[in-house]
Image (cartoon, rainbow, N blue to C red; front, side):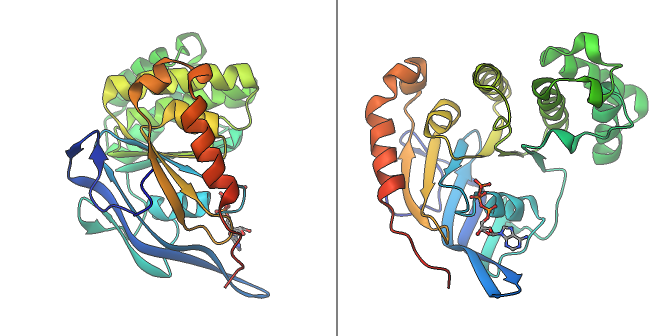
Length: 271
Ligand SMILES: Nc1ncnc2c1ncn2[C@@H]1O[C@H](COP(=O)(O)OP(=O)(O)OP(=O)(O)O)[C@@H](O)[C@H]1O
């Protein structure tokens, strides 16, 4: 367990240059009762090819951090950098998959949703965008549903479209905000395995938010545990690849250490 934050991503024993760096980031919201500090003094980095998981109890600021990395929120202190440059706004180098099933455009077909993202995000001609969209939809098992509209799909299928859309844009960083939380356990497990396979095949870098320890170990190469209210870094854990290969029955020791950290983290009052 490493308690100190690191500004150089480490994969195994090899120091790699960081793709994303959070440098003493705090994020606050104005509320009718005053300023609410959601995240306080968080520093970490992600190296290319890593899948970093932010793990912590509900309300600890995981989504807030993800939104700030997405460029939708500005830190009240500290800095977020991609490839050494400060993040100021959303960009096609960061694509987010959200938990909500309504993240697709309801008036466009499955194919239209992915194609449109490529046309807009990458200024791609329609024919090229359509070819890439079809390829990704086939890859996530939706070849026979390209002409369907989102409201006719199951929750899992909608998330597959959102995942296909995100991967199709080839962002430098994939942001995943509990994308499987609203799915039944069986579908969630299947989708975790599919996501893992896609990430490993493409070498994509991902920042994944969850409050499930089992999910964190399954999808992540490294886990950052946050304290409750306001979110601060409690500890980081490397997930050895053989842990995943053993399946959830083999998560024992790591799961126990994470559980101890997450549940023994002190409750800190809002500032
Ligand atoms: N727009 C907002 N305005 C005011 N407070 C907010 C806003 N969004 C989030 N918060 C507060 O910031 C804190 C962190 O919220 P956030 O959604 O980031 O937590 P989380 O760890 O992602 O929770 P969950 O796992 O339940 O999604 C919470 O106390 C929440 O009430």
